[in-house]
Amino acid sequence: MKTVVRVASGQGFWGDSLEAPRQQVEGGDVDYLMLDYLAEVTMSILQKQKERDPSMGYARDFVGAVESVLPAVMERGVRVIANAGGVNPPACASAVRALASGSNASKLRIAVVTGDDLLGRLDELIDSGHPLANMDTGDGLESVRDRVLSANAYIGSTPIVEGLAQGANIVITGRSTDTALTMAPLRHEFGWSATDWDKLAAGIIAGHIIECGAQCSGGNCLYDWRSIPDLANVGYPIAEANPDGTFYITKHPGTGGRISVPSVKEQLVYEMGDPHEYITPDVIADFTTIQLEDAGPDRVRVFGIKGRPATDKLKVSIAYRAGFKAVGTLAYSWPEALDKAQAADRILRERLDRLGLRFDQVMSEFVGASATHGRLAEEELGDLRQALPEVQLRFGVRGSSRSDVERFTREIAPLVLNGPPSVTGFAGGRPKVEEIVAYWPALIDKRVVTTKVEIV
Amino acid sequence: MKIRLLQLAHARSGDKGDTANVGLIALNPAWYELLERHVTRDAVARHFDGIIDGPVVRFELPNLGALNFLLHGALDGGGTLSLKTDAQGKVFSTALLRMSIDIPDDEARRLGIAGMEKL
Image 1 (cartoon, one colour):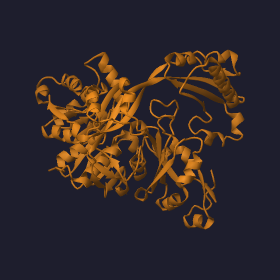
Image 2 (cartoon, chains in turn blue, cyan):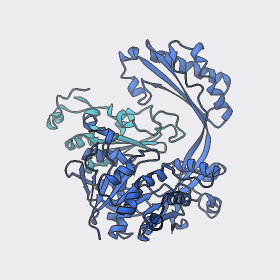
Image 3 (cartoon, one colour):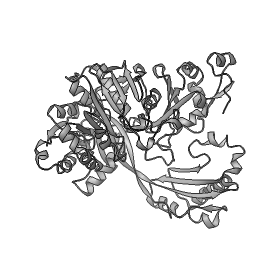
Image 4 (tube, one colour):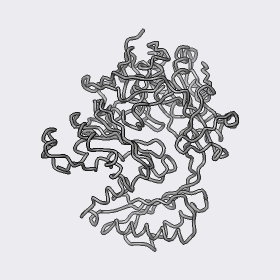
C-alpha cells in the first residue's frame, strides 16, 4: 500500500485555465489528476447541446485536457478522474478514446460511470411516490414538470473506486459530487471502507479544499493579497494524503500564488452551510473538527477531521425553463454622474409602467457607486458622491412573457437622446433577451439510484 | 473604540440558491473571541437590513477562528434567476467587512488593537 497519495486539481469549473491540467502533471510527481467541470446549471446547458446533437452533452474542454496529459497518463501512470461526462459520459469516453493511437490505444482503459441521469425516469419516480420537492421552497416538481430540461442525482465515490479497482487510467462520471473526485482515489489506494467515517470525511474535505482549483492557492485570496507572488504563474493545489486521513495541501515548486493557513481557511468557508454537517452521498463531514497547521512554505497540514454516517438520501439537481430576462446598461459621466443615472432609472421605470409591461422583477444598479454593496456603499460616499468620474446604470427585468422582456430592450436606447445628459456607452446595441434555466434542488431515496461502471 | 471588521478579519463568500454565505475569519487567532462576542447574528442582520430579505443564521468555527453567516434571501432569487451583478454573492464578504463594532477600551488594550484607527 502507498503511504502517500498525491491528488492534483487541474480544473475548478468548466471554463477554468486550459493550461492547468498539463502543468499539474508536468510540474512534479502526482498520482491522480482531478478535474471538476460541473456547476449547478452546467447540466442543463449540456442537455440542450445533447438535444441538438446526440453525440454531445459533455464538457468538451476535457478532451483537450486529456490530450495535453496523455503522455503522463500512458508513460508515468498518472490517473485522471473527471465529472466531464455531463449528461453523456459514454460520448465523452468515445471522444477521449479517439485520442489514443498505436500501442496507447490498447493500454488505455476508460471507466464510464452512469446512472445519475434521472430525466427519463421522472414520471415513473413521481408516480411511485418520490415528489422531488424543492428543498428550498417545498413545492412539488409537478409545478414545473413540463419545463424540466435535466435531472441528475449527485452520486458519491463508490462507482469511481470501482472503476479504479478495474484498472482504469481515466474515470469519467456525470453528476458526481465535486468532492468525491478527490476522495475516491484515497479510498481506493488506502483501502478505506465505506464506513471509515473519519477518513472518508477527511477525503471529502481534501476535495472541498482543492475542487475550486487555485482558489485555495492564492487566487481570489483577500488575506494580504498584495503580497501573494506571481499569480500569472499560479500553481494549482495538490492534496498529499496519508492512510490515516491526515493530508497536506501544497503545490509544485517554482509556481506562483501561495498556500498558507489563511488561504486554506478562505477556501474552507467558501459556499459553506452548516459546518457541523457537510452532507455528501458518502459521509457527513464536520468542519468544526478541522485542524490546520503551517507545515513550511506553501504547505499546510490538515488533520483531526471527524465524520458521521451518510443520510439515506441523494441530492438531485434539476434544471427547468423559468422565463426570460434582459439586462441593459448606460454610462453617465461627471459631474453629478450618480444623480443622472438615478434620474434615468426613475424615468425608465415610469415608462415601463406606462407601457403596462408585466415583469416578476425589475432591478437597477449603479455600477461605480453601489452595485455590489448597495446602500452600505452609498451611505459612505460623502464628498465622493458628486466627484465620481462616471456611474453605469445597469437595469434588468425578468418575467414569463418573452414579448414583454423584448419590449423592454427597446426602451434603453431612447434615453441617450431623451433622458438625462452626459450619457454614453451604448455601442453594444440593444440588450439580448435570454431564456432562464433555473435550478431546482431536491432529495431522493438513495435506493432508487443505481450506478453502473463500464470499462471502454 | 469603534473599529471596522476589515481591520480584524478577512472573509470569503459564496452562494447556495438564494442564500449567500460569508465566512468571516479572524486576522489574528486571538481576535476570534472578539468576533464571536460582537459580530452577532442580530448585528449582522441590522447591517444587511434592506439588502437581504430573509433571516441571518450564524455558525461558529473556533477551530478556524471563523464565523459562518448564512444570509437568506440575499440574491434576488439566486443563480440564473438573479439579475444582480453579484448574482453568486461573491462580494458579500467585503460588504460584511464594512461593518464596525464597538469595543470597550480595556478589551481593545488587552487584545492589542487599541490605537487602530477606524479606516
